[in-house]
Structure formats: C-alpha cells, structure tokens
Amino acid sequence: MQTESLQTFVQAAKPHIAHKSPPRSSGIIQIKMKLDATAAQLDAEVVRTSEDIRRRYRENKNWRYHTKEWMYKNIPVQGKDVLDFGCGTGEIATQLAFLGANRVYALDVTPGLLDSTGRRAELDGVSDRVETICGMIQDVEPRPVDVIVAFAVLHHCFPLENIMPSLVRWLKPGGVFVAVEPFVAVETVERLRNVSGVPYEPLDEGERKLNSADLRYVKSHFAKTEEKYFRVLSRFGRLMPAADPLFSRLDRLILALPFASKLAGTAVIVGRQS
Image 1 (tube, rainbow, N blue to C red):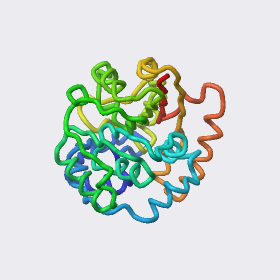
Image 2 (image 1 turned 90 degrees about the horizontal axis):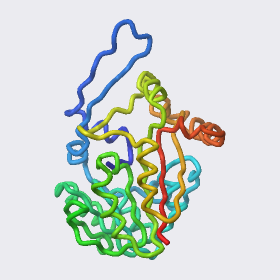
Image 3 (image 1 turned 120 degrees about the vertical axis):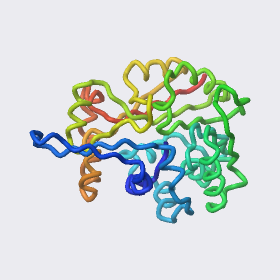
Image 4 (image 1 turned 135 degrees about the horizontal axis):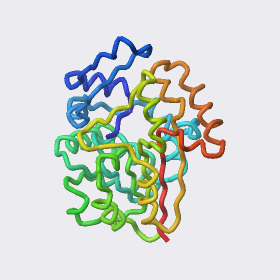
C-alpha cells in the first residue's frame, strides 16, 4: 500500500472505518480502525503530483529522517529499469519515473489500481516510461531490472516464501532490492504502541508486521544486505504534525544507540546481488 498523505488516506477510507470505543477504565484514548486498504485506494482521487512533492524528492533535504527520502537518496534510479512491486495507485512508480528511471514496471494484482497508476502517469507526464502489469509475481514473466522497490507491500504477502524467489528472478546481476516495511521486534513494545493513542492496526485480513525472522529470510536471498530503522517517536507526529520534525530527529538519536532498533516501527531492508 502506498499513500502520500495519511490524512488523504483516512479521508478516502472513511466509509470503511469501524471505530471501537475504549474501555471506560482506560486512561488513554484509543481509536482503533479497521481499513480496507484496497477499497480506500480505489476510492482516492488520482491527481497530478504537485510541484512541492516533486521538489521534496528531488532535493531530498530530509533523507536522514524519512523512509522514502532515504530510499531515493541511497538507491539511485536515474537511467535504470525498476520494478515497483505492489504499486497501488502509482505514487511511487511515477515518482521513480520523474526522478529519472529509464523504465518503471508497475505491478499489482488489482486492475482498478493499475488504472489509477496509468492515469497518474499520464497526469505526471511520464506515461512513456511507466508500464503497468497485472498479476501475481509468481505468474508474470520477469523483465530484467536494476532495482526492485517494495514499499509497504511485503507485509501483505505472507508466506514470504511464495514471493521472494520470484522477485529475485527479476534482478539483473548487481541489482538492488529495497523494501520498506512495518516492523516489530518486541511484542511488549507493540502492545505499548497500541495504547499510545496512535495504533497502527493491520489493514487487511492476514497481514502482519514483519519481525526479525522475516527480515532474516528476506536478506537470505542476497549476497550483501543492510538495514535501516525508523519510527520510534515519529509516529506521534500524526497527533502533533507541527512536532513531526522534532520527533524524527529524536528518532535518529535514539536509533544510534545499541539495540535501539528493537524499538523501531519501520524497517528498510536493502539487498544487493553479486
């Protein structure tokens, strides 16, 4: 699932939201939402990517603090062929194209989402470089690519054994795989998150956050790997948007400490083929 704005996503998802009132004995207000992620994306209006967003990702001033900026900074795509696995409505696919990718293969299993991706590519003026593909990764003939992007997709795809071998077949020698995923290392930390007032509930039946064993499995498919962790305090930026830059900077300080990755809510996994 890919969205540019949590507010836009929640607005689009309102018909599919079920609120659960907290127990009266709880001192913390909890708002639990069950969202149909695909329906929310299909309901969302497709618009041209704004100049502010284009400038944000071209300049990448805050790449140390945000997952997408970090990905665009550290996994350059200019002149390269890219697979956007689980492209959703095409936000990342079109961003990859206007950041200079030679060809972006936008793959998803939902025809309506691919229609949105095609429309977004037209509005953004990159339709000549974005090719939509409908199907399961296991069933699609691989196109050799330099980069695979899986942005908030793997946690929809359990068991991962069903998809990782097929994904790796798309990579050229020396190719790079990058995944950005919700992550939980310690269940106690996850329970605390869920009473924080900003719960991050599963969006579709059968999905869950990746854990440390999942990360090890993904990394086992590559010759070289690295990990980067985000979102310890920055999740509270949803409650206090004006304080989001402060939370993001505090995250970097916290995550520099030994073993602090166990507190993170998002993991970035990079795998490189030999």
